[in-house]
Image (tube, rainbow, N blue to C red; front, side):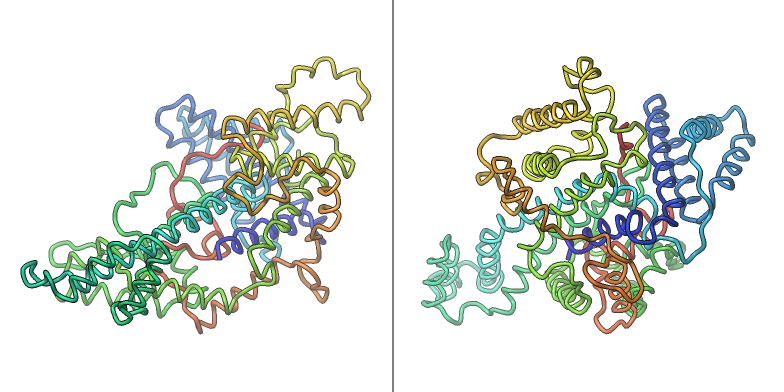
Length: 545
């Protein structure tokens, strides 16, 4: 579920910006990405010199809203000049002036585009997916590890909690020396698969399997939902203040706020997210949740309007609902998790080979001047394998590593001496020192061979010891830069996959759960920037800042 949504965004952004038809879109979209990078750099400079971050966030939000409106650069600059002249002495005016200077210095320009040419995601989501794709992969890999590591302990703890709730309810004096007491004590001692099998053989009627399965699903699904939400938030527009998630968080609670004043009940809806839910065919689900809250309030259970905890039954039902929703809307991206490494490796290798995404100077404030445009198959294999090894195993920040290795000022000790070397020799030296930088960064996060690291899923693609095999893998990699629409729909087509999922949502046949923290599909929640609808994070870093 989560991997499919993130990969859809990563592939769509590349097909939209670099695939067939991108020549006409490129005059619109790539300079917009460059503007976001410049704006983020300006915002970070403003925030560094001002304890109050309001001005920086306000500037970022204003630019993103203008970009998502589809306006061209001329109209945007005109708006900036108008805003800066309203109060010339204000911090906001100074921020607009700073950005105007950067736009001129970097010669950023782009025309307006019609609605039919607009992307399916917000411009900020596209920017993050292009310039820092590995960050979300790292979070999802960590999520998979956490779920796998906790599966067995969760099963045992759920069994013990189930037995406690079912059998340990009577007073102690009447509970002791009974069959229920014997079952309860035997259940507490379960600590292995053999122990569980023995318990089930001795007490075949002790556990109601359906109730236990619901408890296990709920125990796994709640932390899984939070981890997926954290990964998805990487593509959401940052806000000035952190959102308070100390109470129950759910998609519905993001949409609807309930308050009381002088016996009056007030319901407020965030229009942007409400529209997204309606696009998903969830109007009935929204009304069902509203009805539930109203019934609680009318019955005097005002403390139940927002429960302190979401019941296990709700999480278990949401788990099954999500499974059905993704089954009916499943794409052809992959059919099993063991196909993910090829997709991930293909995406990274193609970015390096074609100098796009993380390696595209058109999306960066400072160019990757030490990385030539043309690379040999062996050099592409060395770079991609080293990057996967360092970032999808050792969890180093990919954008920072690439910037340090290939952008001025370079950290490489031989940078000055390289000026007079032939281009091929400079490149070979740059790649060698990049690999050394990767190894140096990796050393701080543990040692050992690839096979000993927790994230074993990418083991084959992270094996730096056999570059020849890496070259062969990359030759067989997916070619995902295929037509976005039209009669030719061969291969991976993210645009078509998203439209199919959207159609599935509009039918409402299988409703998407909104009473848990598990986020909406990325193409729904990140369609367009609306400041009040986005989760709060810190200011991002600009590419090659």
